[in-house]
Image 1 (spheres, helix red, strand yellow):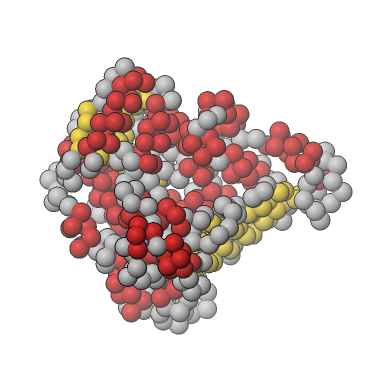
Image 2 (cartoon, one colour; image 1 turned 45 degrees about the vertical axis):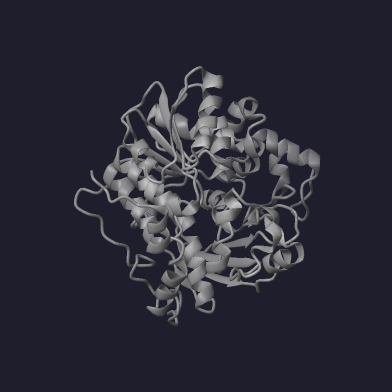
Length: 482
């Protein structure tokens, strides 16, 4: 299939970055976020946000249970060999049944360095493509690739993933998969039409604590779930002013958007706890932002890069707080803060009728501790270390039990390896991945939805149903082994 070619200039002019603020304002002006909502039913939008989901084309089918032919080995290619791409290459090299056959980067020296590293580790040098903004299109057209990893700046995620799927490859896309609701729908429709997986690389779903809580939920320890809290709280002030890496492009979004710019690290795991998209569904979101202070203050006080950023004006509030209401009446609080002096946290909290968990540090309270042979007398306090150890031993996720040794030393405490192994193993066996394109779209859509709500004076904004109603009959993820 012949596709129009895109350059960085086209993407920036066409609205992926420069037009995002205008696109969100357009949505609010059309009543998507600005009209007074009826009780329990915020207004729908013309782009598929809340009750206006675009219909499938003839022959277009859901992919929530898509399986593919199994294969002995999985052939992998990388677009993007910078910081994140390089770390993912390391994880793939540790998966015995995966081969990296091609690498691509705008900076050809990075792709060459990655190829040399791969050749040293495996004795087979992958094809190198680089030095041209369109060269990734050639990679997607190759016939010897099963999976394309996209580890590039955010504005390239959608066009690269779409082209990979259109040429018969599964697309494994870094977070967030898309920045606009329209692009989320583009990923969904392409995955359904092409019958290829579009998996967002949300590594936090494979953290040991996250998998522990998921197993507790599925084993009934939490009872009926009511509320979750999650976040991305990470002091990135130094990184945002770094040159030659992600800071150079990531900071630009702070000049154009005001909302949650990075929702999926926190939202992904709790969405899986709650079965969002599988038995429940995000209904609407209300979002508020604090004033913008931290990034400007850091810039003025430290004068990074000899003061070259003195004229930049930042829009994004230091702390954004969004609250999602689900179709079953549950609530999810999501925060974003990358410019305040504070310890790292994703909060990772979950509350039900039978238990409450709060992370950083990990704490668990259970309503009936004697039921689990614990020393605690009641659920009025966090479990002591000995009791928590008992619960961890009993409810450790089987994926962690199976892969802990291999994951030791892997990125982000081993979660990167667990994610990489699990995703590639699904391709190898032909199984449906733990998260599919509907999850990538729903979790990523909070970027635009939060910005719309903030721009409208924190009015409720309806959440699109990317499953087109399938969530009502789907069941939450089972506990998988390895």
